[in-house]
Length: 549
Ligand code: ISL
Image (tube, rainbow, N blue to C red; front, side, top):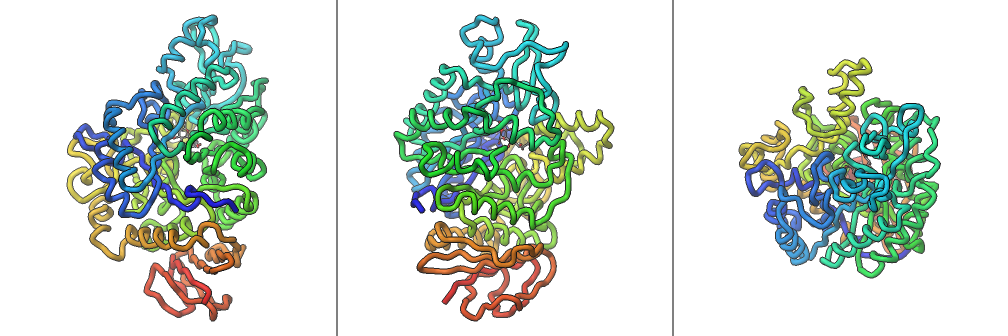
């Protein structure tokens, strides 16, 4: 097993809009992040991943970039960015940026040129096709609802957008596009950043037949039609060879559609592609044929099966990141834990899971506070383009708006985009102005000030486990084996190497359980989210970590 800093360190994701506002305009910004760097450092994380802060019309909150070389004024200036990078490095941390190059904004200068005429020099920067039978070129659907093609009357053709209509897909077949991406990479790498999180990177190579698909499950379409196209590895390898490999940096690819069968092609140590991926199999659990607002049941045995499949698929030759939430999914405590009676216990249990599986842990902002989902009743309180597009689509197809909102409460992306709850003052200390999205009303009870004053809080539990992981490389590189495989309430597994062995016992249920079946005589109990006790009786959501004598 190759050893690398990016396997040993832990990522903390910041969604800048919602982190901390320094100006009072209601939008988080770079100076806000700078003011909280000591807070982040004290938590014990190492690598900050910043969601996009570039120029953007914000149709998809910055994942629609109109200038890759400039900072959006609502976040600050390039001087602010330089100060941030310096502040992060001065504290011994690293910074990785979001690279969104499957698509740009339709307000990017390239697209504005591209749409002007069929012979414009930028025409082939994007994917244009004539219509078919009076409609779009094929039946592909966008991730955010509706056709993946938009008609443009200027040239009487359609352009491809796998996300919103304001996110046209770039045409990676065009070498000039790849040159332009390499330039962007080198610009930021030369500034001294420490790597990239690559947005929807398996989507960059298209299947050029643009054939209709007969698949009906959206997740299947993503995997078999949009992702893993014929030249994807060639393109990723090209940007590695022409930019990444000259720097000591890390890359993590966001992996919709990357299955265990193809995972190693992206992250195999000898591939010259990515260091690791965020595989999404466990995050897409519960998404029905029409996606997240068309939910289907699943349980913990599914989650465990997926972790096992990925561990086996990677072996000692590849690497993944371990995470249970990010800016696209609900709060982990609400989705995988129990966010009322056992909120604190279950949040602690989930953190033990993230920090003891094999892979680079990634923690989303606010998770360390135990922040939970928000339940707005009015669609007008939501900001996410995905929620609004599907609200229209589902209610027009006959779904009761109340039912749709209940799915949003469970799955909507705004659950994790409400402002960070710094204290119990107005607007949760996030902003002196009106926040761009309402604060979760539970900020009175759940906030940073409170957890920092409570030695038994989720925050200090994270801090303790983060430093424990740092001191015990067995938890990073060691082997992993699950002992009680089909148990839907208990997750029991070992991590070991030549020097140490740890046993982790997680009761991910609100019931009491007994450990009588396990022989624990040779183990000492090191950590529990309840009082340390030799008893074999597990409390609801109890998480224990034992060490072999
Ligand atoms: O959240 C999802 C859909 O409900 C995911 O499918 C998500 O769209 C997918 O993982 C791609 O996400 C990334 O690219 C999008 C952007 O909106 C997301 O925020 C980003 O993480 C387009 O850039």
